[in-house]
Image 1: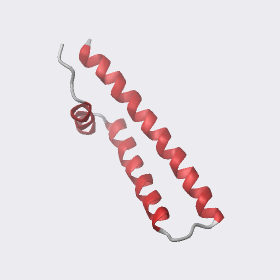
Image 2 (image 1 turned 90 degrees about the vertical axis):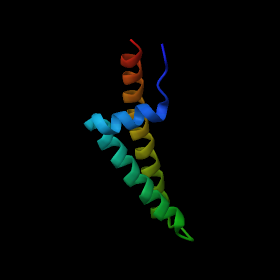
Image 3 (image 1 turned 135 degrees about the vertical axis):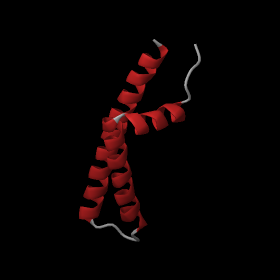
Image 4 (image 1 turned 45 degrees about the vertical axis):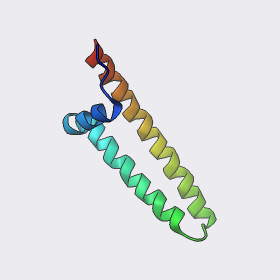
Length: 78
C-alpha cells in the first residue's frame, strides 16, 4: 500500500475538510499575530503574556489538525 505524502494529504484536507481548513486559517492568524509581536524590539509584560497565550492556542490548533491528518491517513490506508 502506497503512503500518501504528508503535504499532499494536508492539501487534500484543505480542499475537502471544512474543519481542517478552519483550523488552518486560525493557526495562520495566530502565527501572523506572533510574528507581529516578535518583530517588536521590546515586549512589555502584557506582550509576553499575549505571546505565551498565542503560542498555546497555536499549538492546540496544530494538535487538532494533526489528529485530523492521522484519522484521514488511517482511513486512506484502510
